[in-house]
Image (tube, rainbow, N blue to C red; front, side, top):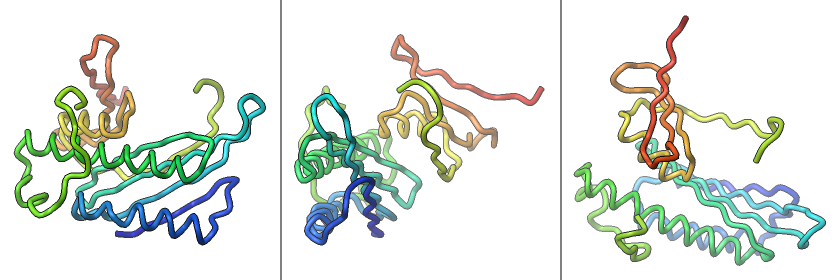
Length: 185
């Protein structure tokens, strides 16, 4: 597992680095074949309630699955603890979905621990200020919906494995999902 720790408006001291490494080092006990983990630590300066510390974790699995969680608090170490807990919960949801779908679950997760116990029911505007580049892995519509839910977004861009075209799946206000299939005009 490759671990990258990045700071924005935060100096990554050896104390912070070792703390994050110790917390993230446990992830492979709960989810096998993690390719990369990126931890972004930032300080958000505001005039209202003081400065806020932000911790974001992005986990990339070798199968292309991406899990992401973010937490904001006044203390960096508390933010790291909270975001790691969120990632554990996402891993459990991911494992649960894989189990229900029957995707080689037994062989993938047989010898790994459970991160957290989940109850059955748990399963900004303006100009462009950030650009993200990401690799696209061909997948089915159901897998795209699952990936969107794991990321906590209301849309997800993917290459449809069946058609080979770029599609967008999104969550509708009525709780259902929509699929955008662009056509060249």
